[in-house]
Image (cartoon, rainbow, N blue to C red):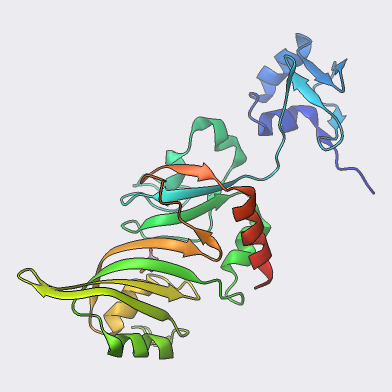
Length: 249
Ligand code: URA
C-alpha cells in the first residue's frame, strides 16, 4: 500500500505545535525527532501513521480531521465568517483554530442547540446531501395550540410559502395550553431535509409562530445535555462511528 507522507512543518503546524517559523526554530534547536532521530530539515517528508514524531520528547498526536459538537447559543451565526455578527468559529479555542473547522449545515442566528463542526468535507457532504434525508429533531415553543390536525398535516408534508411541499415530518406535541399570556405549545419535530428556516416556515404554513427553537439531533448524533450554551466538545468514538455509519442511510 502506498504510504501517505507529508511535509513535517506542515504536519506540526496542523497539529497545533506552532507556526511554520516557530517549527523551523524548534527543528534548528534539535527539539524535533522522527523515530528517535533528530530532524535537520523541517521540510522533510514524514509518514504520521507509521513514524513517531516528537517535540521536546512529547509525542505529537496527529489527526487529519476533528469533529466537534457545539451547543450553539442564540446571537451567533453558523458561518465561517460574517461582516456583522460573531460566528460559531469565534467560540472555538485558539488551540483548535488551525483545523479550519466549518459548521455542517446552518442554524438560524436565534436558533440554539446541536451544531456539528468538522473539517471532514466528505462526512459533511454525506450528512447534508438532500438525497440522504438525514433526520433532524428540533424542540420548539410555538404560539398557538398545536394539535392533532397539525400532526397529520406535517405527516403528509405541508406547502411552504414558496410553494415547496415538505417531506413528511413527525410532530410530537409535548404540551399545549392556554394561559393568561395566550396559547403556547411545546413540541418536537423531526424533519428529513433542511430548507431555509424550515421549521419556522412549516409552522407558519399552519398559521402558528415558532418563538423558540433548538436542535436536538442530527442523524444519530444527539445534543449532550451536559453541554452548556456556547460550549463544545469533541465527538466520542461511538458518536463518530454512528454518524459515519449513517452515511449510507
Ligand atoms: N428550521 C428553522 O426554521 N431554523 C433553523 O435554524 C433550523 C431549522
